[in-house]
Length: 332
Ligand code: TXA
Ligand code: MG
Image (cartoon, rainbow, N blue to C red; front, side, top):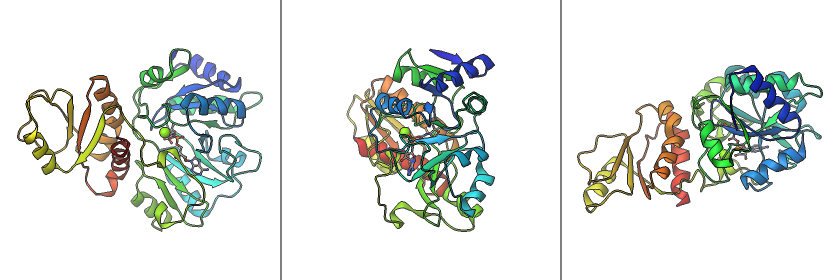
């Protein structure tokens, strides 16, 4: 059931559902989440079941404000505090050392916890309402509301399509950011960028006074992340990434019937076979991120079998979009 998330009554119904241990489709500024009380292990177990997600892929815990960190994390290094001041509420997740009894199932028992304070007004209202319940719900675990490995949802309808009418979904409109939050590991003494997003490597460097390391620069010791598996974000269609020139040659070589092919391009194309579905990607990285997942879903609905996508620019602002497209291409 989809409820209007801007109504107080919906927000309170949603908070009460979370307190009872039920699941909720929650809008955030990045993507829609499949939410549950972070400290209710059986509610959290339902998230893993509904998504088909392996239990060793930890979930992000969403909090109403920076103070709520004290319920989950035991040490916040200076650079993490700087990131919180600069970017919360917003599309940034911090991995911090976990308090022993907090969010056990959510974190798969790891000694760290991923925390994020979303800026979406509906998410914020729900988290606030959760805090004043008796007993309070201090944090809400919410992975993207899609089946494991599939394209993340950016509208309430995407969530309802994925999980059916029984799930309560708050409608908060189309997501502003469109790709998942940037994740920075703050447990290694220096910032480590685990997942690129709208907050860029440069943004982090500017605020912390040090460039974040990449995962590759640091040896990992635990399996960390669905969002970091290579083949992920997969539409039904096969995705291929190509530079503009190669894209044009592929189109020139194509035979008469291109009806099952979609081309998502930024450069002007000189020609395309009949039937090929052309869609222009926005020139700005933030705008491209906003519509990325919805576009992949549209292509699936149209019965497209092949999606040819122009490789995005190599610059830092495009890193999040590049990352999601590379994973989508690796899946097929
Ligand atoms: O934008 C977002 O972050 C969205 C919205 C709903 O807030 N949520 C989201 O959650 O993307 P999910 O579960 O799809 O991605 C969680 C990511 C995974 O890559 C996971 O490994 C990482 O966060 N993560 C969570 N806790 C972690 C931890 N303790 N250590 C390392 N990585 C962690
Ligand atoms: Mg996800």
